[in-house]
Length: 80
Image (cartoon, rainbow, N blue to C red):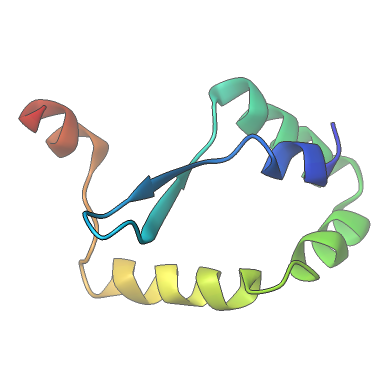
């Protein structure tokens, strides 16, 4: 599975305004992504970093986690 195929299987979590807030991958797709990344780390890294906005999105996510702006799966599941 190529990175393009993997990214086509992403599902997004959106807020009430329709803004994308998180990305979900089915477990088999996640596992395929891990295999892909480990198979050729340099090529995979270069290909993924070339995706427009990816580096910025990763940095924003890191900042939100550091600021405590995230929800744990267990908490969401409990409230559903």
